[in-house]
Image 1: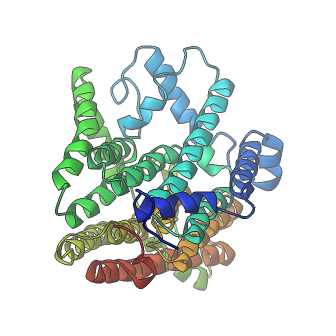
Image 2: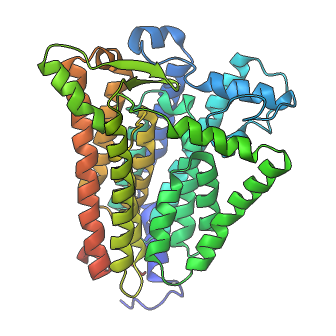
Amino acid sequence: MSTATAPVSFGERRGAVAIREIRGPRWALPLGWVVTRFLMFALVTSPNAINRLLPDLAADGDVDVYYRAYRGIHAGHLPYVNFRYEYPPGTLLTLIPLPRGLTFDSFLLVWQLQMIAFDALIFWAILRLGRVAGARTPAIRAAAWAWIIGGIVLTGLPLVRNDLIACCAVAWAFVFFYERKLWWAGALFGLGAVTKLWPVLILLVLLAGLRRDRVKLAAGSLVPVAITGVALTATGTLGACLEYLKNYHGHRPLEIESLFVRPIQLAAVLGGHRAPIDTSYGSINLAGYHELVVVSSLATVLITAGVLILVFVRRGTGASRNALVVASVCMVAASLATAKVFSPQYILWLLVVACCAGATGALPRGWLWLAVAATALTGAEYPLWFSELIQCKASALAVLTARDVTVVALAIGSGIVALRLLRTGTPKSLRFVAS
């Protein structure tokens, strides 16, 4: 049978077949997403369920902070000047279009529905990314299931935080990156950066690895940043915004979920006492040990620089997209492992990038499911064992230590995979894919 009959690229043909052949049966993936997201929504909208099953998960999470910002904006007040707002200004974009006069309960419902919509867009992006990358059906299916399972093991947490906004921007940025629409990819990375900052890490990896089209990617990313800067300057809030974010995040101590706190907590358990804690900056932190804060910050800077240097040096004639998306997994995992603040919802950053890398077929499924395991362990720590963690009990520390080991292993493993891809271009299992 002749194979040269269709005027379509092999990658496009493989992608179309991949989407058609997502079996399980065909409706299993969308049904799985609908069922799990309904359960997540039911958890955060049923106070009785929250109190019985998840006593440490507040039913409104951080939404009270967003609600105060919403009321302030619609009353004509300026964030960072007339009221304190700890998040980057991009998060405010979800608040501005909302109608005036919402009560907290109605705002909470709208917020949760918004987050479900962002989650659905991420799910769609993962499937589309696998198609445009020309990945095999099992890789696409595994990545989609990883996102579905990763969400539900965090209970309802993603719906009462704002991290899905940046995750959605990053997922679709990868889609455009593989479609070679570099300007749009950069714009979405920039939008994610003004919303949650961490997408800058991925953008730096891509800029370090690209030879062609780097200018388009950088230019696209500067547009939302420039628009945000102009808007803040025009309203007289730029200085206050930068000052507040610098003071808020620059002076924060080590959160008790940070990896660098674990030796202190384990030593305290062995010594029969608790690690000292305090409550500040809206979190529970390790009291004292300022030298560990410095070590954590230095480790983040050094590892970030190391990953970028390796990508830049090993890019050869131009790093493949597969190599760069896996290097992004390494970068995000390493930054979480060294961060002084590791709130439970931050694991979504790692999960979404791992699912994108898995959907392209570049990240082996073993490492993809390791990201899901890290997400599940995080969901077990909060909200299930958070009270025990505060009390420095061995059971909670065991769960969190396992999570830490998993994140570090994923950073190392994905880094090795990325280096191999940078050296060889494409692994044997991916050489059939049109680049």
